[in-house]
Image (cartoon, rainbow, N blue to C red):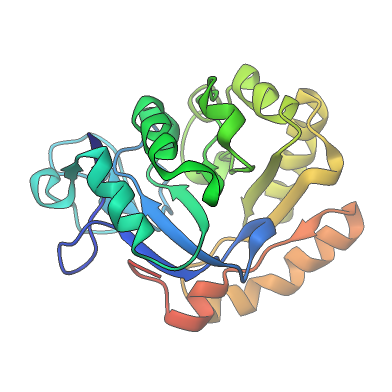
Length: 244
């Protein structure tokens, strides 16, 4: 079984769209959004995957979600069939935190076979294991900074990040909202020995107006440090939300 998030209409969160972030921005992709996360960022744009009633976590949203209505468990073969029914053959496994369901993902990718390229979007706290690691083309790793509202001991796991870096297939995408956050990124990259040419800065924001306001500063910081810039294309095109 795979635990999936739901779309607004209650359907499983398996959908085709343009990748909105990271090194594959603009690529037609089939997304599978898993439910459940081991972190709890205050600015998370998918709180319906973890911000449930009865949990002790905090989020900027005033709304908590009901676990029983937001989480959908499907057989792996059912998920594979739904993925094959969509046209993009670039598959993005996202969440929540996909690495919390590695065995189910191994089975899914085995059923899908070699026709799909596979990206995993992960927070970098859980190291991937074989044979799953060999099947992933790109790890888009988004370690969390102090602006997420969590202690560093929860959000930064050096061994997992170094394991991901050692694959040679990982990009590190950091959500920044200030130059203080950028300095934090620089310190972590240096301390953990992460590849300098695989760093991406992305402005924090959930609306097109917020992103446009914050992007010039982030672009300047990228130029100063030689890192890549990522926008949030899906927010500009569709306004964010589920299934985009």
